[in-house]
Image (cartoon, rainbow, N blue to C red; front, side, top):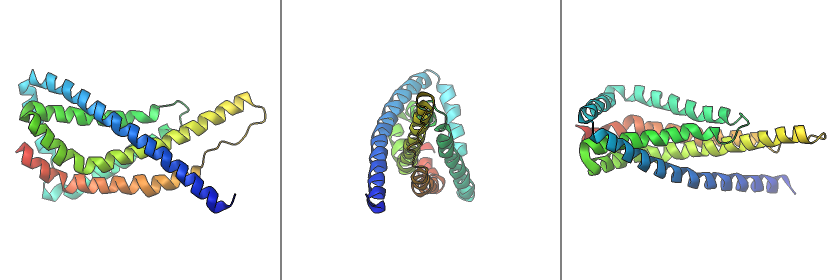
Amino acid sequence: MSGGKQMKKRLKYHLNVIGHYLLIGWLIFIVMTILVGLLSYIVMKSNPHFVRGLMSGLSAKFPGATDNWHAFWAILLNNERVTFTMMLVGMIPIPFLYWISYVVTCASVGLVLGIYAAKLGISGAFGAFVLGILPHGIFEMSAMIVAVALAAQVNKALRQSIKRFFANPHYEKSPLDAKSIAVQYVAIVVPVIAFAAIIEGFITPVLLRLIVH
């Protein structure tokens, strides 16, 4: 098989894997957001004073016009760090650990929506989701899912290598295509996270102030 055909075959395989993980990842997002959102809504409704304090804190954290660049860089560096950490965790030969950061992020979204629902009602929470989370979240969460998919491939290859090493005296090289994984991370995850940070740093605060104030 020629080099071009091999590359095309590998690319198709990786895209299929990413597509599979995107489906699973968004299903997890929906389920976690709803469950945590409902739970936090129930808890917050029974503690109205606590809700008011949280809403004041959220309002204070929305950057003003002079703070947008600071917010952008803080968000960018944090999210790039999170996705890079996912890749590093993927090197630990234990499956599914690389999902932890993503699941926690999904839960945090549900928590925020539950707080908004307790303070502003279901319509307010829906508005917060549409205006304050969805614009940047669709890119940020998708990039995180792609990072999970890449980390999963690294993890699987390492576990297979360890298994072969102990089970087969004629140890064979891991099937991991490290170059392809790295290229996909740099070409997909890094720029998409940056684009999401631009939206979250400059646009999201303006939209959310319409709801909070």
